[in-house]
Length: 165
Image 1 (cartoon, helix red, strand yellow):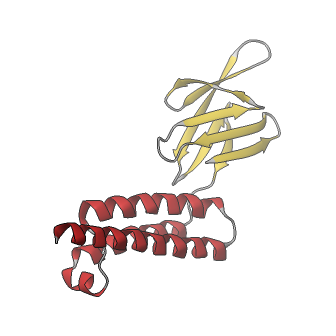
Image 2 (cartoon, rainbow, N blue to C red):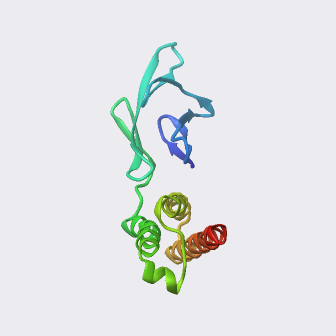
């Protein structure tokens, strides 16, 4: 995820965070800041001194940068409906996959494999939903991720049953 924020004092602030590794990178006016600690970076001044820049928050709660008392909002927090919809994918697969009577109606793989697939799809769905603005598009994307997760778990269930027979 990459966001660009214009600040009146510091200029263009670019924040990048990897979805899979969680690695964070911070740029100010195109130059990458040096990481001093886990969540602290150093912004060089023209006079040769450095300003500590502290990054707080996460992908889920929103990210803010603290620069000399200024709070710069880098990313927004996930909306409640984005989190709820994304988690619904995970819980649906876990509950449906754990019920033998429901799997007779529509077989999907559950357990660790179903949990891993649905967990990954939940994270990617939340990431994609946060990256678009219109609510109708967010819900349409959620429906697409839900259908894709069910299709993947269905195919895995068929493969698993075929291997057992």
